[in-house]
Length: 321
Image (tube, rainbow, N blue to C red; front, side):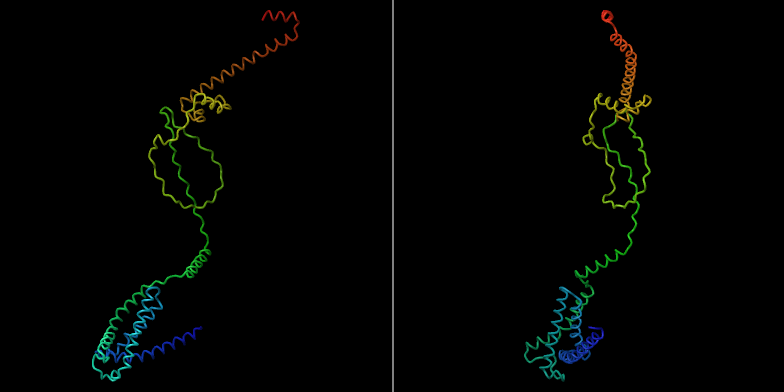
């Protein structure tokens, strides 16, 4: 329906409700005068009953759930009460002229008592139920339906997709890792200091900042001996074999205790012992090689003479040997 048709429909509804209120207003005013209300109170009495009906109707359209059912009950109760009072007004002609006795709405006493109780309790009920309905409407929070949630979510996703992606923040360099506790170093052995690793020029890499899920690491105390990893103990022969393998291509000037200590991973005292042993081995090896070089020509000459000697010369050589 278009806007003009809706306007006409609402205007017609307001006109019908206004005329119906005028008809009901006449009957309720006479009822109020019969139960002892003065002229001003009797004039306002219809607004109390029929006005609360209109308020309950509006609350029914706004509220939902249990509050809506409560508003419907109030609307139905005051509609029935207004209908009963209008019906009584039509049955008692004396109410029209105001000649009825004060507080007398029916000839039968029980019916009269019930009608007077109903007419006098409606204003008090209007105060209570009207205040409650207004409070419910003011504190009402509309519940979102699944369709509305989907629409809102799609709007949010559409809005966020239009935004430009923020550039990632640079990652701060990690602090130096804590040293892992190992076997205790002997008192006479200095602490090993590893040579700095060569640095190569690496092109900068763009990294995405990652959110840390863990808190800062707390400093731990001294690790007990039982929890420390045990390093296998090497025999002197194994150390000598490793030192030979590591220093096979070294020059004599590079054969120092400090270099052997770093290469094999031992203390200074053991490194000095290995240094002396390796130097002794190299010296003895050179001497044996020289002796071999000096003796080789004589042996070759002797074999050559044996090959070219006569049987008599061979016999003489064997006797000499």
